[in-house]
Length: 354
Ligand SMILES: NC(=O)c1ccc[n+]([C@@H]2O[C@H](COP(=O)([O-])OP(=O)(O)OC[C@H]3O[C@@H](n4cnc5c(N)ncnc54)[C@H](O)[C@@H]3O)[C@@H](O)[C@H]2O)c1
Image 1 (tube, protein in one colour):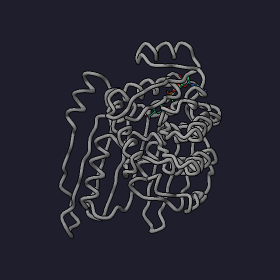
Image 2 (tube, helix red, strand yellow):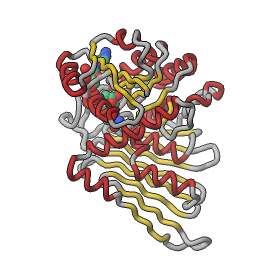
Image 3 (cartoon, protein in one colour):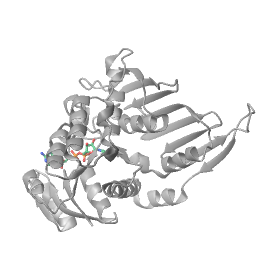
Image 4 (cartoon, protein in one colour):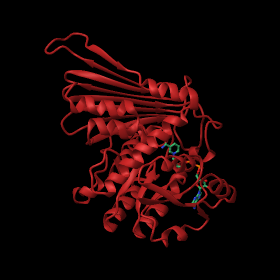
C-alpha cells in the first residue's frame, strides 16, 4: 500500500482525492490546505487528517508519495520540499510557470532519487491509449506529422482568476489547456529540435496572457507538428490530436470521446478505410454523471501508473522531464521568433524518470 499526502484541496485536489479512493494500492492519509473551509470539506469527505502546515506532511515518514495540486507558481516549492523529504511526487500541470523552475524540480528529483511525474491525465483517456496501441501495431507506419488543438471559451467567468495571471501560470492558453496538448504532440512526435510560434490577445485582453497561441515544431529527422491553444473556442471545451503516418492516420478527439483510424491500402494513394471507436461506456457514464466521471477515471489510471513506476516498472504517464519539455514547447511561442527549444542536458535524463 502506498500512502499519499495531498497538497492543495481545491477543484482538482478534490477530484484527485476522490480518484485515490478508487486507485488500487493507494491510501490517502493527509491533506494540506491553508484555507479552513477547504480543510473542513476535506475532513468531511474523507475522514482523514488535515492540516494547514506542509511541515506535518514532510515530517510524516509513513507518507511515501505526494500529489501537488496547488496553483502552478507554488509547484516548485511544494514539489522540492516533498522530494527533499524523501517523497515521490505527482505534480499537476503545468509542472511550473517557467522552464527554470521545471528544471530545478527535475534536478531535485534526480538528486533525491525520487520519482517525479507530471499530471498529464489526457494520456489516460481511452482514445489516446488506443492511438498508442494502433501506432505500436504499425497501423499508420512511421509518424510523419502531428496536429493538435485545445480550446475552451476561456472568459473571466470560465475558471479561477489566477488562471489569467501569467505570474502564476507562466502564460495564457498555451500554458493552461494547451499544455496537455503540448504533451500529447510531443508524445506522438518525439522530442523536437526547433519550435517557434505566435500569440494573440484580441478578445479577452488579460494582462500579459494570450487567448490564442500557435506553435510549429520540427524534429531532428524532419517530422513536423503544430499546436493551437485557444481561449476563444465558441463551440465549447474540446481538444483533438491528429497523428499522420506513412500508411495512415489517427484522429482522437474529446468530447465526445472518439478515435478514428484511417489505414491506407498498401502502396496506393487512395482514401484509407475508417475504423471508428466511440467508447460507449464513457458516453453513457458522462451522460449519467457528467464529464467529471471521465476525469476521475483518467486520474485513477494515471495514479495507478505512477504507483507502478514506484516499483521500478516502466510507466506510460508523463515524467518530470515530459513536464519540462511541454513548458519549453509552449513557451517557444512567447519568443516570437524562430528560437530553438532549449535543450535539457542528456546526462540528467536518467531511467528513474521513465
Ligand atoms: N489535470 C487537469 O486537467 C487540470 C485541470 C485544472 C487544473 N489543473 C491544475 O491543478 C492545479 C490546481 O488547480 P485547481 O483548479 O484545483 O485550483 P484551485 O484554486 O481550485 O485549488 C488550489 C488549492 O490550493 C490551495 N493552496 C493555496 N496555497 C497553498 C499552500 N501554500 N499550501 C497548500 N495548499 C495551498 C488553495 O487553498 C486551493 O484549495 C493547478 O496546477 C492547475 O493548473 C489540472
